[in-house]
Image (cartoon, rainbow, N blue to C red):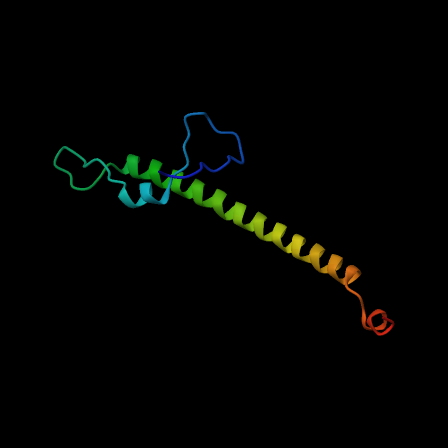
Length: 93
């Protein structure tokens, strides 16, 4: 089971499926025929473009989540400082 599918952040065709790490690790390419050694360069290029796009989206999402996390922490600190009794209030009790 692969787990939940990531939410798309931009328009993609319905046929597009993001890559999972296991797909990258197990990917095998078609050997080139006609006496040449190696794999089909076009197939490798398409795959690498997809990996690069998925990584770029992941890094963008991580950066966005870090910014959101910093804003939430800052808001929490402000809220705590407004709602935490100070030393004068504690002395008056």
